[in-house]
Image (cartoon, rainbow, N blue to C red; front, side, top):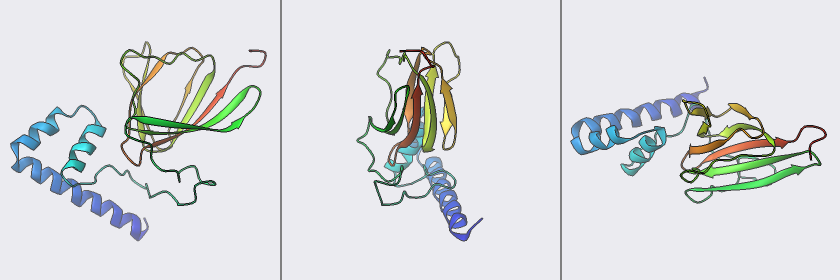
Length: 176
């Protein structure tokens, strides 16, 4: 482990320990922590108290050159996603999607004509697949294949700097 990574890790541990100590000293904060239903809620609660505990192992700030780097664009507004088509061909397209605390509207399901393969370049996401009892949790580097017409919905993505996806959409040969 490089010294910079070690320092990043130790700082996160310090922040976590301080947040835990504060939650033990303040019953209202402990209750608020108990009321959190997912990782994102805990990260936001900690941030509201001045602690930055959301960065995952090995994550760094994205480079500053926007055009040539998939991680360099500004984070979208809270609750939003920005999709950019990177390549568009006859039977397939490649998109970069940047989400910030985004979720599908209540009762909304994607039901796409195309197959979709996604991978997370940054952050995490929680997806619900119709017919599955447990949501799919994706972290940086994870990928998922969603066959055409597999109904799915987005339950949560990370707060700023957000979740960055690379999504490949395609149709089988001969499909319109």
